[in-house]
Image 1 (cartoon, rainbow, N blue to C red):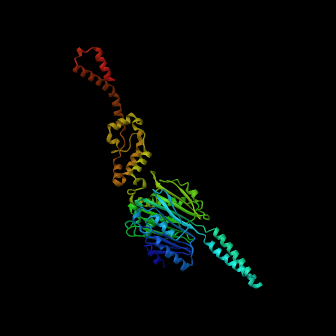
Image 2: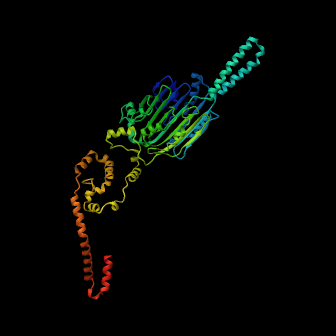
Image 3: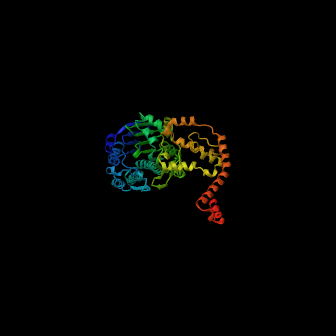
Amino acid sequence: MWDALLKTVRCEIISFTRNDQIDAYVLSESSMFVSKRRWILKTCGTTTPLQCFEPLLRLAAEIAGYTEIEDLFYSRKNYKRPELQVSPHRGFDEEVAFLDSFFDDGRAYSLGAINRDCWHLYTLSRGGGGSKILKRNNHLHQLMEQQHHHSQQQLQQIQQQQQLEQQHDAQIIEASMQPDPDQTIEVLMTDLDPNVMAIFTKDCCTTAKEATQKSGIHRLLPGMVIDDYLFDPCGYSMNGISKNGCYMTIHITPEREFSYVSFESNVASSDYGELIKRVIRTFQPGKFIVTVFANKTSVAANANREIEHLGIIDQWKRRDIQYSRFASYDLTIFPTLTTFGVGTKGHATECLEAATGGGNINTPDKRNGKCFKQKLNKNHEQPQQDDVRSISNRLYAHLHPYRALGKSTFSSPKENQMELPVQQLFMDQQQHHFGDELTTAMTNTIAPTDYSELKFYGQLKKLLDLPVLFAICFVQLISFVLVLNIEECSPLVLFSWWRNKIS
């Protein structure tokens, strides 16, 4: 049944898991979820999800007896390479025209900055119960018109039936006014840490379970039954489902040139801040978009108020935030990008550091060399050392430039201990070039400072300063006498020239 439908989408089923509330399928191009009243399809690449729309409507009517759509949400991020897509997905305008051919009351929206990362949405909300109630009331009206044709006994039976149906209608109306709680959070990430993305390749992990454990995905929403798949040579997909019908799904394209990770879940929460932090700290994106959908009866209906406080998370800063209110749902969306700061290391980065000794990790700040240099200068900028160092230290630096650079020791005189953190940080950053050999060399070459030698040179300088000054003056005077004839110069001219020369 589903195989034939998914052929029109240009993907196929890879694995399957289920419980009493939901069926979850890992596809060759993302995931599909099926529950009693809901069908969710997530795809990627050059798939054609809208092509299966008409066959899906026929399938819902034939198998489940559903003939009306209550809610529809078609959404996606703007394409990075739209020219690679096929009809009807070559542009959002084309997708809207396709959906408008099925619905008269559809609405299309583009949220976020259209010249940057934005989010396209097509939606509608239909009160399916209203038409059914109207048909039932028409039936009751026909029964009332035929009352005079029936006996008294039949009339009583009809009245009892009317009362029961009216009570049932009232329940339907109340149920239609109070829909089941529903919510969805989605995090779309790009420009990801290449070291984290390396986990999702066959060169790093041999099984999907290993990639799930190394990356820390299993910790994002504990209690989920995970069905994961690691593609060859790279790529990763997973579905997670819980007993109460909640799901989560993650799909990863790890290639450096177009790295992409999507996270989605319908887990209910009044504050998604901690979940968002866990997700982005796990994957370390350069930028990402968060969307939160929630209806009026959901505990996440007011989540936008909590999300508004997430202006800065570690090294990520929110660019803007946007709210939209639809017929049955509220939407919150905000794009975020990485800043100059040094963020909290994700679980995957920590694992790789432990495996490589910390020498091969490109954290977001290191991936941007300019940003890293600015951060280094900002945090470790020293005052003008020529102004704050003592005369003895400056003399020490002039007389021993090689030792002052730290080739023999990283310990300068006590007054100059402030230089040590920067030197140590420099060596830490160079660790991945020289490895443990440099550390060993540093340990072997460190020697105690010779303070007696320092005192000697300081005293020598004080003793020599005055005689040297007089010697210079004397040499200048003798030179003038040799060049000019002293007998032909007046004493006043000679004294004036000598005074200017000394000053």
